[in-house]
Image (cartoon, rainbow, N blue to C red; front, side):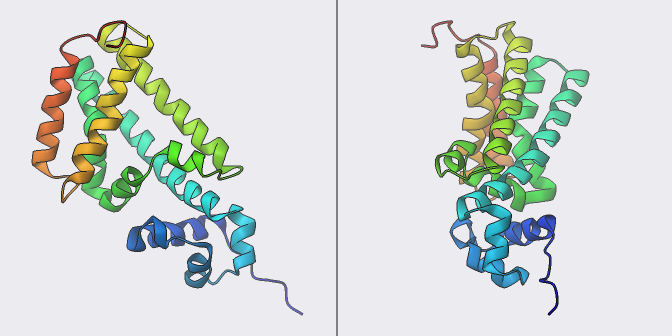
Length: 203
């Protein structure tokens, strides 16, 4: 009797990413991934632990790529401009990312790490998501420090609104994540927010 076919994790993640893009998050199931990849349901469960773990691993892989991209855009803006330019670059990163990877950008904006953690994805997905949150948190603190020489909760939360909340609200609602009008609105909103340091109380 032959040995059972082995399925590479990266290959399974690639199939899973395509399913999410084509069918949405609801269409990414253990059964669907088994069907398109040729792996058994048991093999998929063994690789990801659960459907929640599967969704989290796919999202985390894309998020890791995006955070590296975003960091590069911020670094370039710091070299070419100032702290406000860096904040704008971070906010516009999803639109810039979408220029070459619209599907990946829309996947990222569809859910949050908190949503995925709340679904109890198990390990190693939980650790991956927490590490990504820490990486984003470091970027937010760095931007707040560069903008206002502050690292307190209020300053970091305002930066989060610029980098996370506003891009999600403006870009995801547009017909095209790279829509120039949405990007224009986002850019000028972030410039306005950056112009005045937030009150220390956060209100």
